[in-house]
Image 1 (cartoon, rainbow, N blue to C red):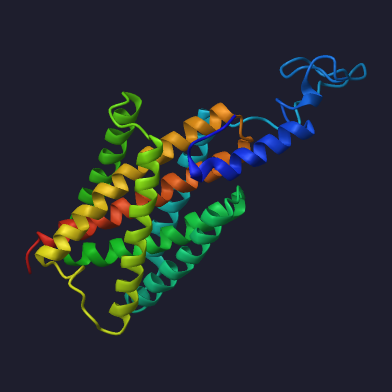
Image 2 (cartoon, rainbow, N blue to C red):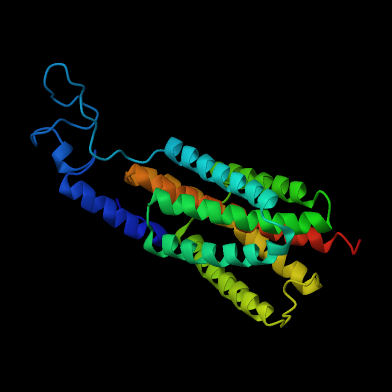
Length: 276
């Protein structure tokens, strides 16, 4: 099945190769008359032995939900552990180290489209350390800000899910291409700003100025809309019959969006807290 989503194109090609080779529930090897039973039919086995399952199970929405809850749980547990165990004297080192490590690992998973549970779980652990350190820092300055940011983050996520389900916002090819371009641009700007900040060069994007507020608002809007891409990828992936292991990739995409949205909301809230 063809897809207009460039993010899914390579995965769709991989799924087509698997089906063409006969591996999985949609390949010729699984069709009636090919010498093997059709998908969903019992496999012939010797007496007393259970039937063998299909070689490759297709991804389902339930798979994605379970994997997403799993990676979020791991991220949350890692954040709590980092908050409790890493001393304040190492907060900055752990923050920057986790941010850089997570960036590299995230790029590897994103560009190679690796449906590897170990890599996704490792990313969740590292992001947990990053989120824990950032949260600890902001909570030390503004009491209660972490709970506010977390509540707002999941609120936005569920709202975007409802808007997508109601087809208020659609992931059209033009929308997908525009979002990918905007996210790439924002990523480049944030990376440059991060490097300059390490040399004490202030660009005004993260200092609480009107420019910083505007930049955070743009990031929040884009991060929120990125969930539409995630939902569309999941829906199309299920329709294309991608193997179940790609539910880890889908969960990874949702985790990236949630962490980005949380950090931006945390920053925005801090700009309105005053100097107390």
